[in-house]
Length: 115
Length: 110
Image 1: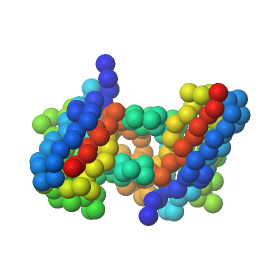
Image 2 (image 1 turned 120 degrees about the vertical axis):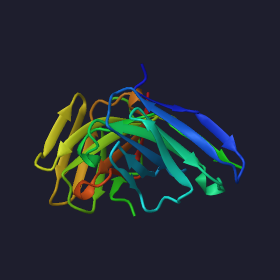
Image 3 (image 1 turned 180 degrees about the vertical axis):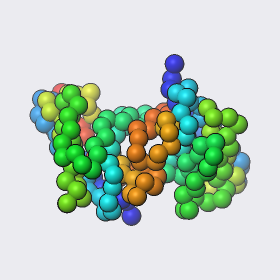
Image 4 (image 1 turned 180 degrees about the horizontal axis):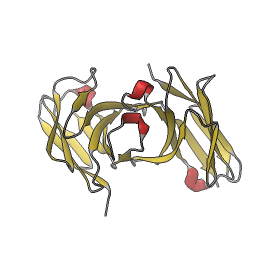
């Protein structure tokens, strides 16, 4: 009955590879998000997505792309992985997609290590 | 730079003591949120305070907001070892996407 789930929990891969992280929410929310948390615990928004609009943080490299097969899923695909991509990636969702106007529900995170 | 910045970065107290964490932000906001993150876990929403509110309570949590000083504080009373976690404030300037501070790492010693 997990509200927001992510797979895998851990991901270790080589530089240059392409990988995907999956996220699913069973809350019936309209909007999903991806965040990156670095080693210093700073959490930065990467994407905000609902069925109408994709909002991209301008600092995110275009090697990162969100893919949403349906309203309950937002996967994160990363091309040509770099060492600096090592971080914890969190998926989140909110009911209406009002950005900071409402509570967001977070998944448990995916710990990515690029070697 | 971060929209929200927490102070202190780390705090260590004994069980039963109160813990106070502060957050400063830079631009006008409609509301401010506080989240908790236990080690190795995702963030959990604690409380949302709107810009027209000065204080809000939830159990042992008390949040204040001073929009004139662009600051907020989170007080945890009668702390427990289970309160050990990182605490983040988050704002969304002008309705944009939620932006988090760097967090305060709280350790409550039994």
